[in-house]
Length: 220
Length: 248
Image 1 (cartoon, rainbow over the protein chains, first blue to last red):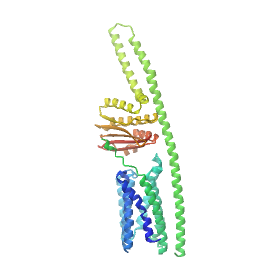
Image 2: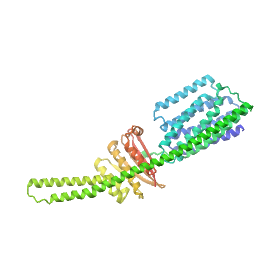
Image 3: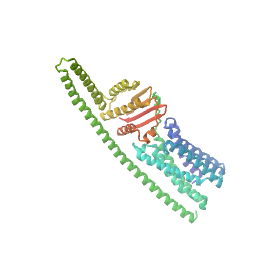
Image 4: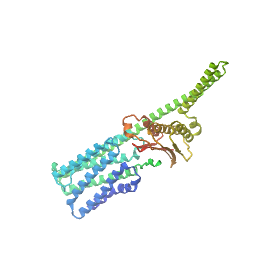
């Protein structure tokens, strides 16, 4: 699969991003971090493609590192908005602080220009756990059709996408010392690309079902 | 790819497929259980509410139809007593007034339990009557806006009336508001009941967490039984607003 095909497939994140931008002002503000996340993902995909076209592969790792940290903050904020940490701001702050320190620490050890897979995998584990908790809460508390619930689609998508990400990228961890050829990398990226498309489609369904902002104080 | 890489890749693909199957199975079972528990939950709540409403109807009817006429008969008997003594006449007069108060109170209790206006003239008139009575008691200006005719089933009318009753009582007793608005509107086959006050507000989640908000749970249950959505926005010092959206 060529770089252009990978790029075209990665643009599928544009569907939820564009739909999110269109619906942004009318949607429940609790979902705003999710829309920022989809827009940022789209920007990163475009930026990485431009960098690879300009033969600036050295910057790709830095872009991915910055994105991974921002992605984690945005999605964690979304879970906080949903009431996952019992609305305790301190818990949210500690999680973000821990993630930041882990990122800086591992970058310091491995080098700033390389993609920080270790911290990403730890963060993705955390996101999967948050999603499972949110999913379980929803199963207990949701009194309407679960398929019309944006939280359901977002949680499913996060669980699937990040589980696959962890499974596929564990071999990238330097301490495992797995030697890789370009053909092997390409095969792995292919699975990554298809998982990406699946996640983007699920995100699009999620954006469709994001509830409207009920600004009822305007009655007064 | 060399043989080792090919083997690694094949193993990875197998792991991915197995994980995929487990995830799909997990999601499908979770959805099935959610649907079953939702159905049971709705049936239980509906049964509870139906029992409660039937019991209220029975007590209201007993008070109104049996105790009311009995008290009127007692009053008639007392007034018919043949006496000329001043003290006796005063006692008869006093007892008669007490009986009048009891009859009025009985009517109020009976009306609170199951308003006649709700059963005979519908939700809109019942809310107007309820607000008039509440305003007299609490001296808080309550504005009720409902510009459309409401054609609802009796079950929905009773549930919506109870919701309005609960929210109004909460606002009048605890909100310390100087204004309270209730609005009912119909848009695209959905009924919207909106209320807002400018009172002291409260922390919705801590009320639910501490299990002290029984009234709030009651509002949620009644909305769920109608297949609707309940929403409460409340901020300390900024007032409270409720939205109840019910399919028609």
